[in-house]
Length: 363
Ligand SMILES: Nc1ncnc2c1ncn2[C@@H]1O[C@H](COP(=O)(O)OP(=O)(O)OP(=O)(O)O)[C@@H](O)[C@H]1O
Image (cartoon, rainbow, N blue to C red; front, side):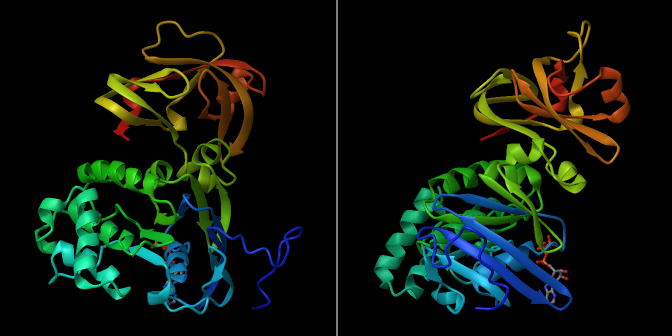
């Protein structure tokens, strides 16, 4: 081990966290240094989020063994992997452009992993067929990648990664190659597959919505360092940097859509302009919320909630208010507006959001 493998105070040096991922990834690339600690329990979906050049892909490649660690540690289910070559790691990777073998059918692409792990041809193909079936692609088993749509190719790539029964699933910008409409559909499917996945999944994205919808926990990386991590809603309401306030500035809730309304799992209903039915997410930016001390009259906003100010934080020339009450949400307002409203923790406010400023997505 190198001198960068420090043990945090209070943690025993031989504590290997038997289950899941326990990593501190230190990678030097010229003048760039990545130094990121990542831990996750089986079943966790962690999103690495950050701007271009932050080091997300480097972290993912280090987990896969495609770039060597300069220092730190990498343990999966208690087993050190630093010296294990990529092909021998129990790790499945879905690359951004999928990297399917063009000359192989979808079935043989998926069977490739189990074959490499020593499965016989028939068994590998049977496993591959079962995965394609699970992905709703049984009818496309014989298709070559060029005949698959973007969404289908993405599912084949996911099936190929999962067919090896990885203990760590890595996804590099899994939705980036898709057009906006396909993306909605594939995001919802990917979310379901990740929810069923029993080991650790780490995905890299610079799309905050993908990160918030797909992951249980966000790890925000800037300049090779973790600047904040936590549950998506906590980060949105308590961003630690101006950059994160802008990046993860999204109020996002789960519920059930019926026409132009999404009834939230815990809380009120949110009016939207989208017409959906079934499980859905609904989101709106903190800037779309207007706050009032008295119940507004004559407002065209269809969404109106009684809230209390839990906290206020300044980000640049904006103030982010953390609100609790009928609905927990973040609201951005100017410092002048905050002063005029006399906002401080404990003050009761009405929060209004126009239906046109919310967006609903299938979940
Ligand atoms: N092969 C390489 N050799 C040297 N430096 C590299 C190499 N690949 C990436 N880097 C540098 O490492 C840093 C992190 O890059 P990385 O691709 O990990 O960032 P990222 O967060 O994934 O960005 P993006 O969202 O643009 O993909 C950048 O400063 C980049 O210039």
